[in-house]
Image (cartoon, rainbow, N blue to C red; front, top):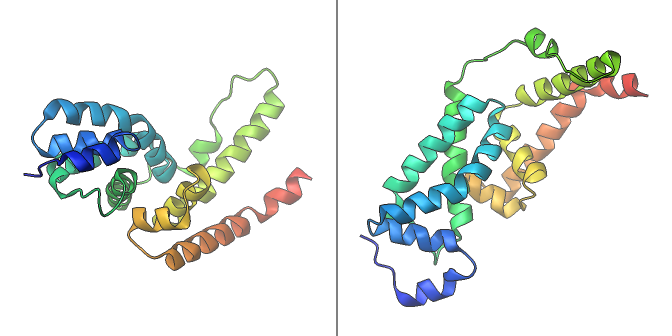
Length: 196
């Protein structure tokens, strides 16, 4: 088991309460783990939804990641990095693994037929079409490009943080972002002309 030393506790208590809870969980404290899970579940689900584009798949990814977190709590070393970076890496691996197992839940035609109860049906239809086209374009990206774009633009993470979460280099993250943006631009090129 991972014994928590007082120096590590003092050093991380103010900046990373999650790390303290995880170290306690590694010592077998189930209550600490439940508290940690409550702290990370909601933001993790939001990130997984952005990466996967599927609520049910995102819930599965978060559940899988939390299970791994419990099983591997003893492997966390606060001297080697932050809890946040370590957790994002576990979550991204679960989300990307889940994405590989996912089947498309809805077709593009079904997505564009989503009804919006807005007062102006014409504007609502245009907005729904725009949202559907952007989502479809993002969903068509390879999973790692989509994850990199979501972590960068959605969560505002640095290249180093994204590289850690995706277990790759910063240079590879730059490439993922560049290719993802280029693919989105190419897919949505006609959209700009329609909007002007």
